[in-house]
Image (cartoon, rainbow, N blue to C red; front, side, top):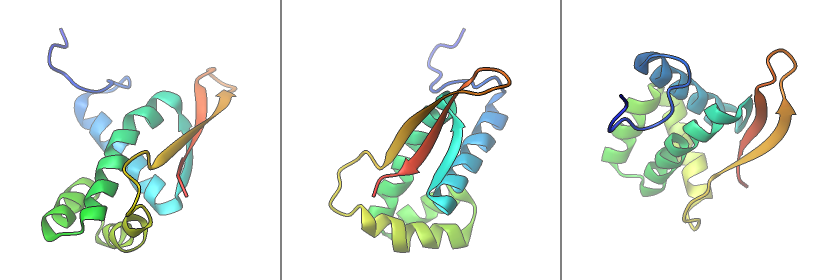
Length: 117
């Protein structure tokens, strides 16, 4: 039973799901746009919004939390120096999900996920 378990399983065990969400967040912050499946995009949305919220705060504790989530010092610096100040007056909704349609091989619903301007 899945009592008190948050998030989607995404067909993997917990450690693989965590690693996949981390790599999706890194890809989104690096390129500011990515193509992925709809369920993965919906799941990584919360992580990305939380990290941008920390970047808006900008204190040392928030930077350390972001470093623990992303694991890349240069990327954390980019998030805190460029992406965080961009959303200083915005209260939420930092990402946009645009539906593309089914993938050819397995008909999984594909989307483009991007950071809102």
